[in-house]
Length: 373
Image (cartoon, rainbow, N blue to C red; front, side, top):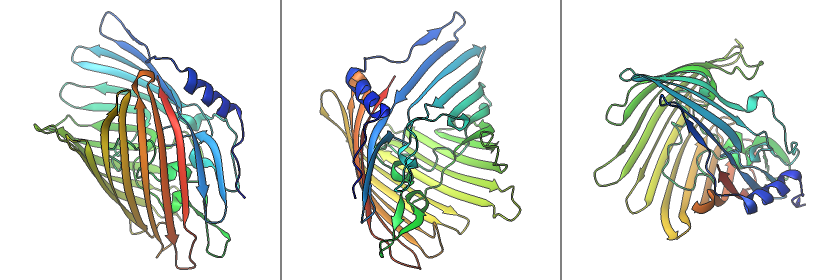
């Protein structure tokens, strides 16, 4: 049976913020020596519904593609050098990716794993930038580079929307295969790490990092990664971005196989507003995928830009050897510049099968809004 949305503190507060949000950007304070303090944040409520082929369930939650958060940055120049600090935490609201047919987490729960950044940096004039603390690894955002303006509603990270839901076999029985497992993508994350970024060489930067999951006491694995990123704007106005990354996860458990991920992505934005994205990834012979999208960023209305995108995902061997996963989706994001709000909607279809049995086709949709301050 369909599960209808329940009124909750988060649902009511979402409605309040969206109807009363002021026109406000985070404050910036500067000192006499060129230093600055910047406060920022965002609130990102959504409603996501998943149909597994037999039953459907929808819940209000925080959009895991761009969750609600607050943070601040500090920057202080010392001659040609700049010392920085960044603190950022998610608010701990229930995530769209954490809900399943069998489980709905509490609306609000904060623990230390919600910390996103506790990060020191040193920017040098000729030797690049050094980082120390909880923050992005070298390959973070390398596998999902995109000029699509509609990623808030859906992109290569398919599991962010309804990743916790279970896929249903053709005989009607729920499997233990989640959307996030079957439709995975590879990309660096955030860890306690040391990281180095090279200076920019005609749009190219090289990055390297070593890290550990310091927020999870049960995870003693070591993480190493390297990446190369490219970003440039041609004289014609066409924008290009691309990246290739490699991450090695050295497992603490001697009986567990080490994980080696290689991934690449690239995107182009034409002056017309059309944009195209390609991405692919491979996990040491235990899973591979490719992804593509085509979109259009437009100025159809006076109160903000409009972005529409269609995309396609194909993966193999993600959960078991011989399995296959296909998905397509369509997304739209509408900016409301006056209020710093993005309204969005996305729809996606899922087709998964393995060597044991067939699965029912599934679908999902998500609608919501993000207010940035």
